[in-house]
Image 1 (cartoon, rainbow over the protein chains, first blue to last red):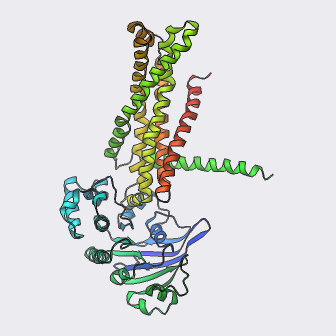
Image 2 (cartoon, each protein chain N blue to C red; image 1 turned 60 degrees about the vertical axis):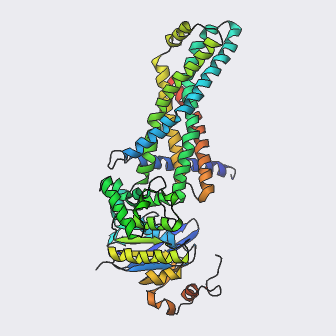
Image 3 (cartoon, helix red, strand yellow; image 1 turned 90 degrees about the horizontal axis):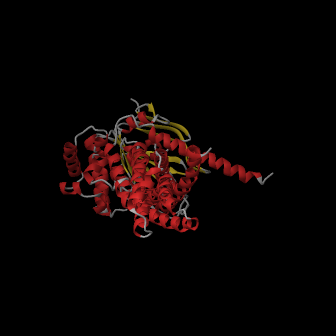
Length: 253
Length: 257
């Protein structure tokens, strides 16, 4: 069976700064993979490389066994249909009401009529725990937690096979963070989707991960099942998991 | 030979920037014939650029025409050539002031708002979000705006031309004591189609410049509010300078020997 997502030797640098330095990563169908790492370690860059928003300098990225680096724009849009992405800040389109945000991809590609799109949006809103009254609001009228939920609804609207979560709980209070984590688990289970999340929130990791990898200095220094994370026998992982200032990772970089 | 290095660097940077702009334009217009067509976005931009710019462009044209009539009267009366006011006003407005003033006003109004809007979309990852939703941001955001600029600015300028001439007429008839009928007659008597059309061609080019600069700088803005601010500044300044520069080039192409 081919892996859902497979990265081999992926490198990316910005000027002289090497952000990714030979990433090897295999994510199997149905897995819930979480990449942890400190701020500024290149977690977002990793996700953006897989999505094709950034082009890696070297290496190979395969989705369902198909190489996706340097795909022509139209073919890449086809590949993108498999993806849903929850952005860190939500990235909702503030010029459009909530329901048009949720069904944006379907509406723009004329796969659905506006009346049907509205019904679908209400249904997706319900699955993230929001009422139909939210559908007509503009994203600016929503609280941070609600924006995250709407963004989640948009990510799952086209029933993607693969969903990416970029720091899903950042900026939320602990209770709301837990709500979002549970929604992520529920939604990916309902869709049977493969997920890749990046986060530095350990509570989130424990809730959603089936496999975990740690990114440090441009490399994945540890990978393993989620239940092994407390006994990784890796000093870097240990320091991160327990949030200690003392250890091999120097703070403030 | 070190003193040559900065010159070379500036030249190379210029070439690189030109290349990036060309690729940007190509990315936008290459999708023009391929579905899906974002007609709703196009209509929205046509309204925004065309209809809602009318008051600004109209006011500018009106006062420009009025001041022009006054100035011409003042200067031309020194050698008893007051009768030429009408033709001077209409030629100056249709050939030069109409398109250039409208271009500059729209650069301030539309160029700035495009850069700020698209720049904010960039820094809040909304442009990345478009890509992940299988939507080409060049086609969705840039193309409708470029088309709006190319098509609507000539329309604005044509209306501005009429209002500008009317501004000159008001001053001449009510202030300077000209009779209405002869003034209007000498306005149209020597006016050629080329005078108006050349101004409209200029307007189309200026519309392209303004919208392109707004989109390009917005698209490439970086790092939060400050980045969006400087993108807006760059968009307006570069559009204004390019308008004045290309105005000279176009004038020499259209009317030069």
